[in-house]
Image (cartoon, rainbow, N blue to C red):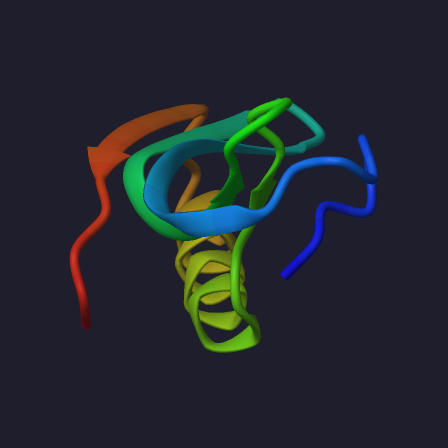
Length: 75
């Protein structure tokens, strides 16, 4: 896939760090699988992974967590 940000680089499988925030809650997830641009480093996370991350963040936010830092794990 060609990068939509820099329009020059191609993407390759890699990993990225995702930060999600809602109100006072912040969740950082490291080592998330993504397609990463070899030119600018922009990361593209697929729909299935995004849905799982959002579900986890929602659960943690409603449980009263303020900060959550974790490594990505396939559910």
